[in-house]
Image (cartoon, rainbow, N blue to C red; front, side, top):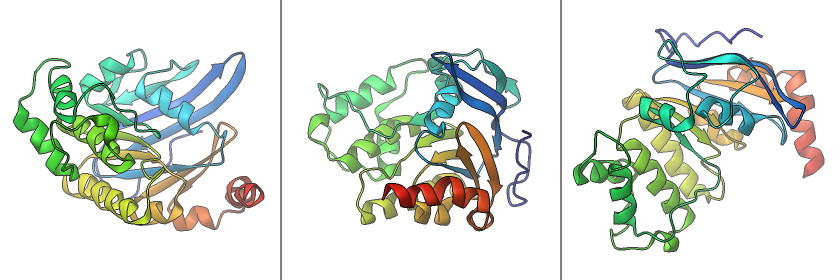
Length: 252
């Protein structure tokens, strides 16, 4: 399936994307020819029922899994063969649905470990920049194990943002958050994309959040992309209702 056309509000060549990604795990086909692209300053949302292949796609895009076929492209370069750590060094940042932090470290120690993870080493001022950007007000001496879910998300995101990545892959950043915290995530994503020109691909179940932040949405079902377009367009698509919303009603 060819990549969906980009919205006219996001001019320029794609920063990141994939072409005809196919993935097999345990002898079973998981992804069936997924293609997508995202430009600087654009937010691409991905939705779909459980088991649609969304997280598996992120595993391929971030470099944790190698696809059976297809290509992953970053700034015009084929990065399909690069592992996760190499893609991270290029500026491909990723967050996870569960915000796992190093429980044996303090907040300050976590920032220090991140600053010194690879060259060029960063300064404490870079860590302060990341913390200020996401609104993290935890003390350096506070054990990360004591942080609540929102502050864990902020800490991990601050660690990513201190290196100014041009791309973020965000896997359900609103999971486990209350409404006021979701509003914070909404504001942060808008700031990153529209003010800092970061490209963002986000897997999210909260339609109300995507309605506010997503420029385009891709719908997945059973390892395939079944719809691309604005949220308004896909909400009117009978295929999307049959695959996603009717299933959600059955599970409720």
